[in-house]
Length: 405
Image (cartoon, rainbow, N blue to C red; front, side, top):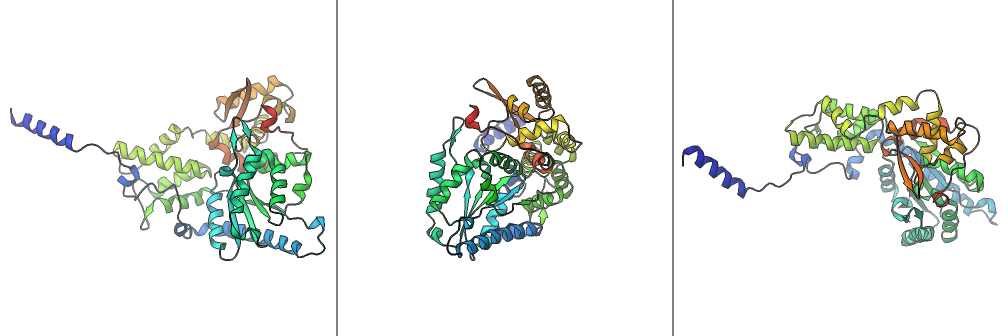
């Protein structure tokens, strides 16, 4: 065997001994692990731009707490002294859950705050909410806290959109089980708008028993860039394959949606690793965005920030039916609640156009068509579409999922 043949055989035998073990692309670039799954409290303390949101949430918690303490101290008890709820609402995928958990951590020595996640506690299967089971899950979760009978207790329910389908039943049951405990509900803009419309027809008194709701601003591109910079840095330096310019571009093209920004970063790191790139380029960022099918966000933004038209009205209706486990909006709901559309044929025309643009997704259940807004576009809808749509006169009659299927 000649020298080159022997060298090839030796290399082959060596290669068999060194079996390939897939490596995390982030680890390959010097990170300890994927930096995105969780954000330690120590990291949050460095994000100074969160200060205004943290103080706004903390002040509101104090307001709900003190308002209810004053009512408990009134004797004799008057129906007007019933427990008052609070409502915080924000855009989808704006990092509110992390803010809430951080706020709870900061206030835990001075207050008894229970954080409950409706997304985890609500039971949903076969296109229906199991209301009794869901309420029991909340009862068991909250009841395990020893201080729950304490007059200073307060419950924060995150992802409250999951309660919209049976909100009145849930609130009545909670009041029976924990009569003196106030709740602060956390909704998306779409979920809160939809619930207010439902309560207008059923039990508006529930809305009147809430302390004035407040809106938590969505993330702007600068703030999003700060979050990504913190997560993608080590010892104060941004790690390859990222750079300040690349992070700013990702933040800009994510349009305030933190989930979209994270998806782009993860895919970008993978592409650089598997293609042998030390640093990412702006072209690669745009290629990744196209691969993830996020490149239509700009067109969607341009549409919903222009003067109101038929399609923005249809999108607003669909956005309110694209929360939690809801299946989506039907032709009938759009026709019955639209000022611009008065026939199923007209609704079908606009829905087909919106589906072709990839703004909405169609799903058929029991031979009925339902339309939902794409998850990637919900932040834009909450930030720019719903606030303007909510100014229109009159209320909507959107159906609950249990009434449609």
